[in-house]
Image (cartoon, rainbow, N blue to C red):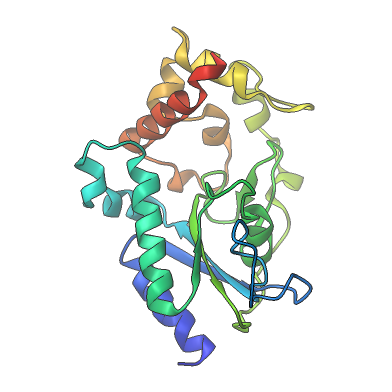
Length: 235
């Protein structure tokens, strides 16, 4: 199978799980892939295929999976890891996940290579279609270039925007000093945080890009509950 055929087949296979594929060739300057360090399995790869949540389709696929109802911790992360590993085995690649490590795989760098995405006014990436809701569930790493076409980028959306995202956070958690996760978690967990707990991050929702791709109420509440569990020691 040639590279174009592989990417087309991968797109179909990933699409069955509500995932979209974006690929990029990687520089040859990384350490060779023959013997990558055990704690850095992505080193030496010559191409990456990112697996991004395709709007609500991913949520529907996840809800139909056994992880959704098995009662074990971190169901979405476990589902993502399983699907990414299955796709990696099927297509002769190595699997990587955003939570792997430390050290952590450079998902943001990969996304800037493979996707129409830019650093946003909030700091996180803004995607041409997904807005601030882009979620990369994993990546496949290949030892040879795939000849993937470069991502088609226009102008950065934030450059011609009133940036309502910066005013939407009730506690101003996104400022010149970066993201104040502690202030965010305290607010979301507190009596004034009901709108955030039920609808997800208000700053993300304020972005005019990708509004149609925002998660529904069930998915938003799921992610905010997971955020609070992860940040519990900070409160």
